[in-house]
Image 1 (cartoon, rainbow, N blue to C red):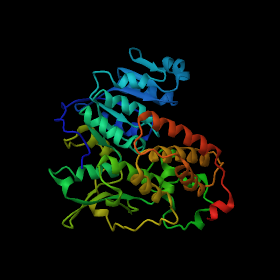
Image 2: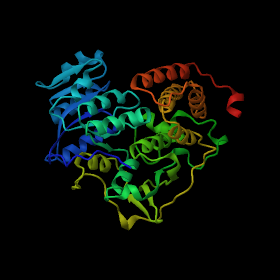
Image 3: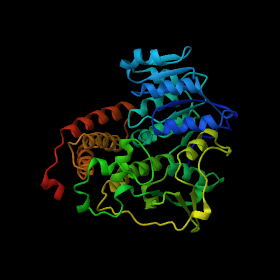
Image 4: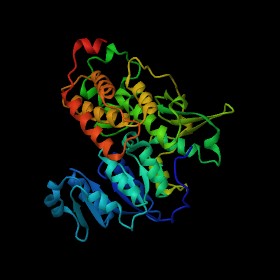
Length: 401
């Protein structure tokens, strides 16, 4: 089981580029960088539409370049950016930027399948990846991990659950002694509700996560448990382990981030307060551990940790994750594309909450599965799945099945 390449430790100060700098992960990553100026140097930033935040970040960190995924924002950005910073824009700007020789690590935090292309370009150039974009592995799977091995580039997980597993598997030979990997999840805002109680969920209710502060897409995914389904698929490829040896447990306190169960029956967990800065810092400074800004455990305030099995009848998205982890091939691309459209439609008010997993299931089952696709095939499946998801219409009869 491998989650990374075998390169020796990087120099103490890493030169990093952050893709998706204005999102939640990007903002937390920059906070870590501000606390570790001797360990992390920000040389590149990318953003999409939040030009004010991107310009403020540029003024604080003075990177060598800033890339825009929305070319229509170039004039606005140029007027707000500090002098001396190169402004890049256009379809291939990120791919060109991350391949520059002065970058040690690329933080991939662009939301959704859109992040795959830039992550692929970074790996092609032999850059280490701090991977916050789980869709890169959901869609690209073995193509991505294979490219990382060929380029001797490390894939360092930033998701708290995958970072936990990665940390727990650092002992030499640990991967060969694993019985199961168990991902934990908070259960989202609707933990404990039945399927019938979820029928009238509103957008505001679904966006009210009890633990984490995240962007709207990932927050809705957490509410449906699709986020946990995506994490199962990511773990399947990141750790090269079959879906039968993966499991999910609900842990509402979000303090234990994952478990590893070894063949002798021992179970080892990674625990820390719910603070994304810790897994981000671990990726940025790996294999070292240094003091940083993340919150510490308040042992005197702890009372109890709770664990329960997920309700798969109320949250059928989770089963789709295990199904896709077993199918491989183009299944991840179809599932992810359909889900991105379904979430967007829900947030736009044109799709009921409980129709999200049904739409995804129908698109997944209806797509032409290819067990050994190339990158071009994955892009084609992504495009076709989005088109079908846009046309999909729910009915009361279909929802009752």
